[in-house]
Amino acid sequence: MQDRAGWVLDNIYTAVLVFNNDLRLTGINTAGENLFFISHGKMYGHSAYEILPASQKLVDNIQRALVTKQPCMEWGIDLYLPDSKAMTVDYMLTPVMDDEACMEVILELINANSYTRVMRENNLSVLHDAARKSLSGMAHEIKNPLGGLRGAAQLLERELKGSDLTDYTRIIINEADRLRNLIDRMLAPAAKSEIKRINIHEALEYVCNVVEAESKFNIKIQRDYDPSLPVLRADREQLIQALLNIARNAVQAINEGGEILVRSRIKRRCTIRRRHYKLAVQIDVIDNGPGVPPEIGEHIFYPMVTGRADGSGLGLSISQSLIQSHNGRLQYERIDDRSYFRILLPVEGGDNGG
Ligand SMILES: Nc1ncnc2c1ncn2[C@@H]1O[C@H](COP(=O)(O)OP(=O)(O)OP(=O)(O)O)[C@@H](O)[C@H]1O
Ligand SMILES: [Mg+2]
Image (cartoon, rainbow, N blue to C red; front, top):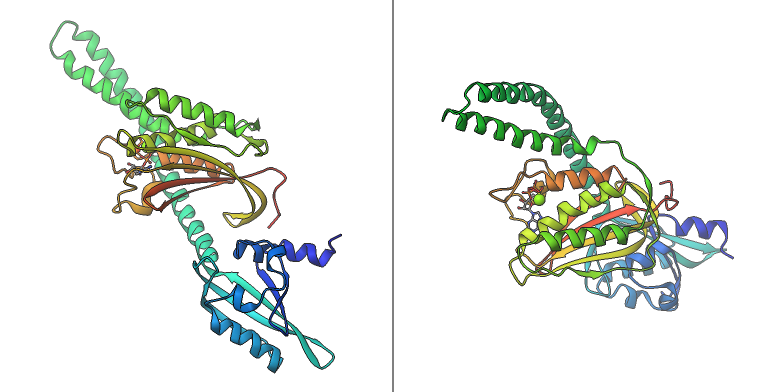
């Protein structure tokens, strides 16, 4: 049975590795396993040279800590993982003494990239919230006079019965309706949510079917679902709306013959908007279109930002707001010529309380 200290170590954000005086691994926590993408069973007994093959300075410092019995600390170091990916880390080495001799060294590693990412995401999300709030306020102010404008145009149309001038009143009415729809979309996320237990795959299937049916090409979305996904507590309609906006963008981004993949996965121990969760559901909508135009880049989640001539730039902003109201996160990544729109939703009871 795992003791309390082991339990704590397995639930912290910092990766902890323990090396003995032969520089062999004698302990690793869950964050360490996640950092090195390998299970502890495979790592025990391996030397620091194997685990940290291209980080000679760090290995030297582990050795030095064993000899000098002095702790050591460094910030912003590039760590090269066995799969040749690089990562910026802060680390601390603490020698553990047994009487006079130094028996082991504890290596604590913090992934500075992910810390920076979490902070950046948080800052962006604060900015997005502020932009959304001021737009919603403006939308409310526009709504009332718009109703008056439309009503007056309708009255005028009645008076002008039979005249060519009704072409103009039609334009006023149609444009007022278009503006009203736009405003309704802007305000939509404020609607009260109805949280129930939902099967996320049922919602994904609904979205895929709608998008396939409305597409002008004969698109067949590929599905790759993890059947072990737990039931989520969420507002089904809101999640469907969020997913529809993302999936429609993917369809708009690809040409005939392009591919879209919808994937679901379970994620253990992840940080979503500065909270740690034991369990989350990850949904990826992936397409092989050209990707987000660089000039709009990371602003795509702002309302009214669009790269399409006929776009209103509200889809992703609404999706993000709906996902955030479920304590989740929506992000965009471009990997190997594919666009990834990645949703992370925490699973109820999976809160680590962090
Ligand atoms: N899968 C994608 N591939 C490439 N670009 C994308 C993708 N998804 C979104 N974008 C870009 O992000 C922009 C913003 O998307 P968003 O859904 O917010 O607005 P929109 O699609 O322009 O308008 P609408 O309000 O009708 O959805 C798009 O105009 C497009 O340029
Ligand atoms: Mg869109």
